[in-house]
Image (cartoon, rainbow, N blue to C red):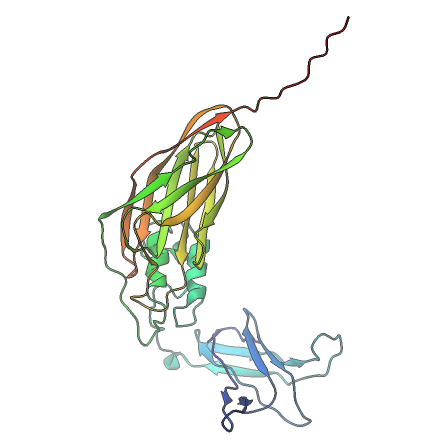
Length: 321
């Protein structure tokens, strides 16, 4: 159990070492060890253990002064209801003069003192809402700028921070293409978002406008071969707006990017026709993140047009005498 007034630092314990050449690694202590850090406790999983005294350790950071109770540790077999034992309880005292201010690390959502993919996922989960704890750049709303600010600084730590990405501010052109043929009422069709020019695109956040009386968004499909952390989608059927985005988590570190050629497909947005008529899908707002986490405004180079027609059904005519 984690005593009040402390935060657990997520780290790996019981590291493995290497034996002779060609032989598999071995654990320095015993068996297989996996540690899971939770809100109120740390769980250890061991596959082997012998009778006697064993010491399992994990690192905590004191956050509040005072005297706190350390509850007993319980031991039980995995996947069984048996109970094997419990340790003694204790108390720990943290003197005020022993506390040092925790270094500020923008985007460290899980308070692990490091920036990881998990922090990026936590920020992305709040898109596009006003969540103060996830608003890394502090502009009032969680947008692609916040996701990129965390993703571009993966690997940063309290002891070795990295600067926030620079501001770009220019415009990147994206293309929209719709289906060539007339669509039948009720069928699904694709509106494709394409790169307007060659370059690095690590993330996008887009807003499409459509006629909600004629079209219904179904899903967003990202280009093959990419590891995309999705943003949304959020459908505003009353206003005819679709907000969606994604960030490529494949790059490892700064400078890596999802580089592509002009007219390459970024995403396919699947719509369905719900009423007969001529409809448009238009890019009305958007952001694009490059490989350094810089944010560019997105503009649509074209409007995707589609015509929905009803299906004609031919019935046999029977004429009686």
